[in-house]
Length: 155
Image (cartoon, rainbow, N blue to C red; front, side):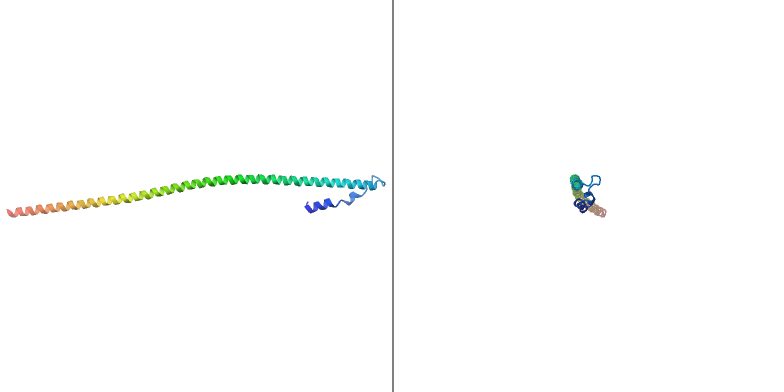
């Protein structure tokens, strides 16, 4: 029943209820009508009181449910914040690890480059030393040949 329908029901008493009861007789008409109106008013007041009580209970129930929902929402927010904080912490930890591994990889790459350069220098040095040694041997061989040649020519 809508709010306006309820107002109409409480504002307009039933005209049949105002008529005197046929069982009471003709002499009791105005008193019976007055008593009937008094009973009707009492009933309407009782109905209004029940209506107000029901509306109050509905409001109280709605308020209680609203508080419960707010509490649950707050609890869910706290759980979500906690989960986000854990994920953020793990993400930061992983970013730090990746950065550390990247730095180590760059350091190893630099070390490998340095070792390859040093090895290349050493090999070039070995080649140069070998060339010098070969040149010395050639010089010695030529020198020996020239001595032999001169020895053979003196004979």
